[in-house]
Length: 143
Image (cartoon, rainbow, N blue to C red; front, side, top):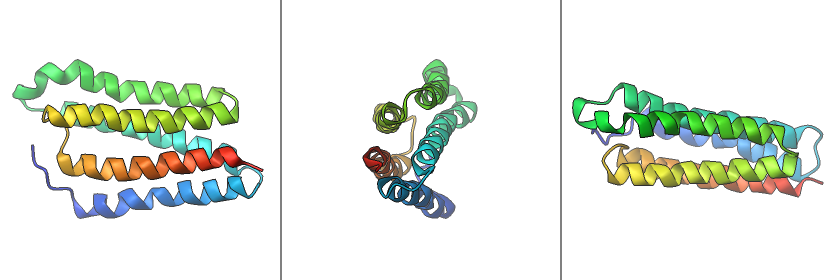
């Protein structure tokens, strides 16, 4: 698997933390609507993280076909968790989103050891996941 991370991914990935940081700051300062917007953005990103695995599965070569069910399952599960998080009371939903974003990165670490996820992607994902989870947890400090 090609381990080169395209330059746009190296730029756009971290840019995706900007809404997390702004909304977390707003929530911690008590800005109306910031905490629900943070949950909505977190749910959107969690669903996106699952979609990455559909893309990997659809582009997989014959040697990786045995991982189709696991990859496509990992593609669906984050969206379902994101949906549940939006149905929960806000503090529980933010906590679930933070845990699910980190959990997805953890599962991706296992996939990387099996050669199913590029190492460069995984490095970026952990940085972004830690930042996103921290912001979601900061959102719990809503005034």
